[in-house]
Length: 474
Image 1 (cartoon, rainbow, N blue to C red):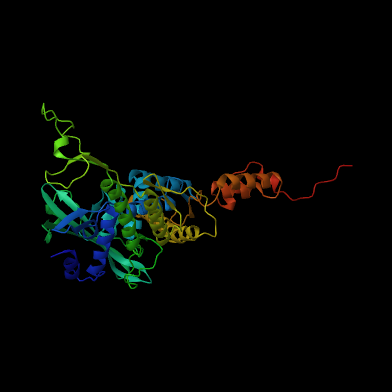
Image 2: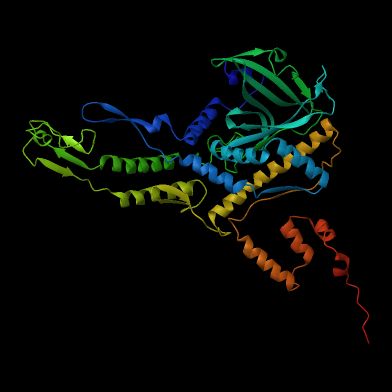
């Protein structure tokens, strides 16, 4: 039985298996080689010859670029409380969040959906499923689309979900299934382990497998708030509009990906087929008196004609003219079409000297790319804020951390590619010096602080904001 049959046997229903087939196609393009496209046959007049098509790997490039635009090292998640900020930062550092979150943005762009699943390790769980102790640690599991199985959803929001992970213990392979479900309005987390024998899953007891001895079959969270976060692109799922899963950023640009690779393959073959050859008749290959060869037999530029070849020059050079300019223009046209379909607008990629580079530009606020970035940030901001709140809540419940779960949380995205921050800073500084902008307003904008924090951080702010009329000096 496969994972879908196991989920059904447990009494749940998830997305159709055919949708995960689509995810598999997107994954193949992300890897750069799709057997049904990059491996093909050509009739040469005698037989069909198997050929491998060259690939530019643009699906990977497109995904990388969206990850760089949405979540990079300049993005900051700010919690107003100092204790809360330190706790969140410590959890992120312990889970390599800066690196993994960026990686997940790339995989989200490629496969459509990603998930962050915090869990606590190092605590004891009683037989009734209640977690005890306070000496544990919070760990983050990072899941990609092919391992996410929604069980219940409403208005596109997944409320119950199963997450699968492949594990290897010794020489055995296992499939670990973690199910988050609502029971009487509160979340339970079920843990199920299967031995994977060539795709055939057989359930085994958790305590019989090394590393799972302390994992309980069920954990009662006692909370009505979910302990997982689903992240996807802000693109409508036109594969199946009823599903809560996202789609790849290039899900509707497969033809454009093919076009790029066809053009690139033709360009490469232009050089292969256009290689200079020198046709030589047999009598010109050796010194008839000494038998010494005139040409290096390992030099592939020479091609010896058969004895009965037609009359012609003894040595004849064949030099094919390369259509480099036409191929460059064709490659650029294909890249422009792909760029537009993937939300970058046209001219985002430049084909130059046999390689693809990303255009360096400051994007105007009325551009297609600007609007697309802002649209994706709507979902991503909610994801990051919810993840931070889950971590704070788990810190209180399981680690007695004494945190304010309702602290204000803000996300400052990197808009340096959208706006010239140096110019904006200089303009605001001039407005500050001219008295048009208040010092606390300047600090709040550039230090990512709220009004009260910005005012309290400025020494002498009371005098600066005192509007009491001063006595005139006679």
